[in-house]
Structures are given as C-alpha cells and as structure tokens.
Image (cartoon, rainbow, N blue to C red; front, side):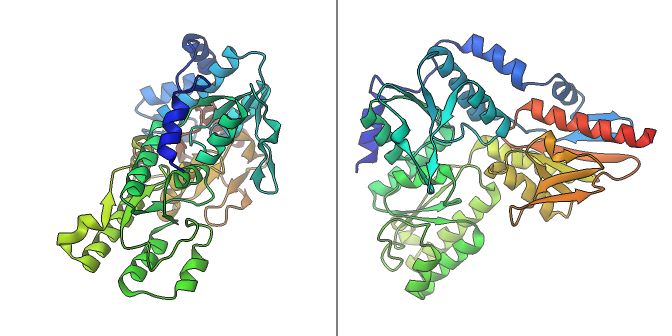
Length: 403
C-alpha cells in the first residue's frame, strides 16, 4: 500500500478535518475552567516554589499539558460542539489521562471497544464522527474509517506526524526503520504502519543486541524470536539490516534515543567504512520539543535537595514513565500516581512501580517534620490534577501537626 498517497488522498477528502470548527473561544473558556489552576499559576509566579506549614513544594519548570495535547483535547471539545447530535467515537484514549478521558465519556464521546485484544470498528456507522487521538492512528484504521464513510477529525500531534514523514523517507530508499519505542504503544503502532521494513527496539540494551548482530552475525532464529512482535512481516535480520534509518516514539527518553542513534551510526561506519556511511545509515531529529523540555526540567529538579518526588500522569503514559525513571535512577523516593485518589487515608499512597508496572500501597510515605516535595507531571496531565495532589499533601501534613 502506498501510505503516503493514501494519506494525501484522505487529507483532500471532504470528510477529513485537521483544523478546528470555529469554536475556539468557546472551547478555550471551557478548558480553562475545567483544567487550569490558580494555585499552579501562583507557584509558577513564585519561582516554582511554595511553602505552607511544614511542606515546601518544588515544581519542575516544565510540566503538564504540552501544546500537542492541549490542541488534541481542544479539537475533541470543538468536535462535540460542532456535531451536537452525531455519534462521536475516539479510536483510543484522546490522551493518556484518566480524568480527561472520563470527561469525554461524560460528553457522550465513545471509545472504540477492544474485543480479544483488537479494536472492533463494527460499532461505527457511515456518518459517524471519529476522532484520531494525539498519538495518531494506524493507516489501516484510517482506511477502515474512510471506507465506512465516517467524518474523521485528526488531532494527531505534528511531532508524531514528523516521525511518520521520517519513516516514509526510509521506505522510499528501502531502508529499514529502527524505531526506538514500545511495540504495544499506540504511537509506535501508528508509526510502524507507515514504515516499510521496520524493527522496534525498546532500549539501549536491545539496540546493542541488534548492533552486535549487524557486526558479527548470530543466531537468526533467536533474533526473530526476540523481536517476533516488534518487526515487520517477513523481516530477515541477515538481509534487512544492511541499510537502516533511525526513528522514535516521541515520548521516549531523549538521551537514550540519542545514544541509540549514535550506536547505530558507529556500527554502520565500522561495518561499511566512513566513506559509505550515507549509503547505509540515515538519521533525522524526531525528538519532541515538549518531551525534551519536561525531561530537562526533571533533570534540574532532581539535582535539588528533595525528601520525595511525586510524578503525576496516566499509568499508560510513556512520557510520564520516563520522568519517573529519572527520579528512580537517582535513588529519590518517588511515587507515580495518576490522580489525587491514589493518596489514601492513614498516610498511605497507592503508586505504580516503574519496573513491573504493578500498583503498590506504601505505608507512612509522608515523613514527619519539615519536608521538601518535588512535583512534576506528564504532558497529558491537566494543572487541576496537579493542584488536587498538592492540596492533599498540604492537608495531610497540617492534620499531622494538629494531631
């Protein structure tokens, strides 16, 4: 399938919408009342610090809603305003935040059901409106919706679209796209659908395994077993790793994406010689500015004296997980929660473990006496959610002092 031609054709269809519907001002007022926070603005204005009683809060200097997420949510709200009576669906969560997705349900915007691990598009009928979320949708999903005669509202973040353009360039020159990402993540599923030959590596360790295979060969069956769910159909490591290009899921750690890119550049240079590098290796900068800014701000925050760290964001939010990783690697007591409801009575907190992804309840998580708490949030987290968490911490510490 010529994915580039299909996307171009779709974009010229009268059923395709990538811009708003003229309700920006109305929606902006609604979003401000539902998601923004005066307390958070106060902390920003106070050099990202606020002390109340025994608690000092230190906010990361970049956190929360990024431009792409805010744009996607605003377009979803506009869609409901513009189509007040039509059935509206989203192919997945609009963003990875439970409170925002719950709000979609309250607005009678449905999510495509998943049956036996696969999305069931049979619920969608001709004339229905379908929203593509911030992290995009696969070519196959777009094709299905187009054939059904749906109105498609595309909120895909431009940074994600930039990665799609990159793998299209790889495909044009018959390069294999090596994608730094999580093969189950919706964004990477969408990106790989635009690629020709592709291989998805989760981290530097997997990249090193691939680099070693390129240089030294290895067990082909072991390779194919290891990446059975993370490569294109018919992938052959002995044939398809001679020319490679680098791409990434935009929410991965910037530093690791850069390390992976440099690793493969050195590998292809060693294999084919510096003079032939451009015939075997391509790399374009597809690291999202917003993801980078939040990671850099987190790196600055963890250099300060902190008693503990709170990272707020959806449990399936990749960029939030990367922020948590920064704190964990520095040995800071850190808790990834998705809402204030995870802060329980009796000085207990339910949080997501970084490695296993399991939920765990910790007793006595708030220390006695004066404490400094670092706070950040993922790019899909509204300021109002951050405010609720901060106010809860203030409340718990104030109650402890009274007792």
